[in-house]
Each structure stands twice: as structure tokens, then as C-alpha cells.
Length: 141
Figure 1 (cartoon, rainbow, N blue to C red):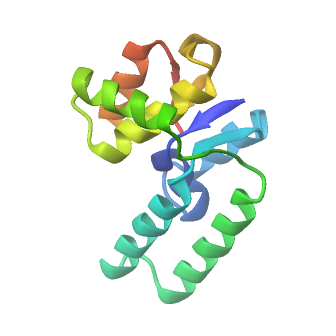
Figure 2: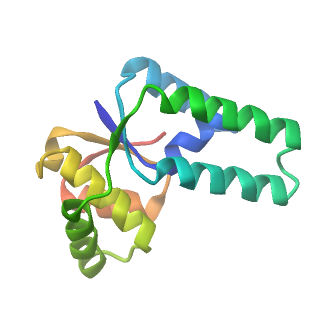
């Protein structure tokens, strides 16, 4: 079981140079753990690509269909006081944005406060550094 940050999920939805590695990672271990807000962050990332003209309307529909299919199988860490507390702590320790701190907080809660017991899949360099400092084993998505 691995915690997946949004930056690692998006290549499963939109073809990119990182898609092959992300698909391989899912095949290795299909048990994906994500934060409650991951689905919304994925839609945001895809919508940005569509606005920038890097994703067609048809491509957006396909990405949303893939998101729905992937989300049916992932384990979601719900929004909770424990996640918020860990995110608040992370913001004091690491140079993270709020959403990334919530991702890290959810991962810490999912790992039952023992980060070394769970791999953290991300393509975000800043979040990767923070998660590694927390004790997670980092895997690119």
C-alpha cells in the first residue's frame, strides 16, 4: 500500500512522459491511498491543462472517466482534525503550500504516524523533500 499525491495520480489520467512509470507503479501495488481532496485537485490539474490548450475537450472527458475509474478503487483518507493537525505541524516545519501540507498530513495519518511503514508516491519535488524528512520512502509516480 502506497500513499499517492495528486502529482502522481494525474499521469494516470492524462498521457505524459510520466504515465508509463505511474501505470507500472500501480501494477506493482494497486492499493492506492489518497487524501480526501485528491479528486478535486486532479480535476483542477486537468482543467488547467484544458484551459492552456494542452488537453482537448475530448481529452478532458477521457481524463475525468479515468479519474472516476481509479477513484473507485483507491482508499481515501477523510478530512479530519488529525489530518489538519499534521498539516498545520508540517507547515511550520517545511516550505509547503496548504494543499501539499494536507497531502502530507493525510499520509502521516494513513501511516498511523509511522511514515517509514508506507511509501509516498509523488512527482512534486518540494513535497517529496518534506515527506522524506518526515521519514517516508519516496517513489516517483
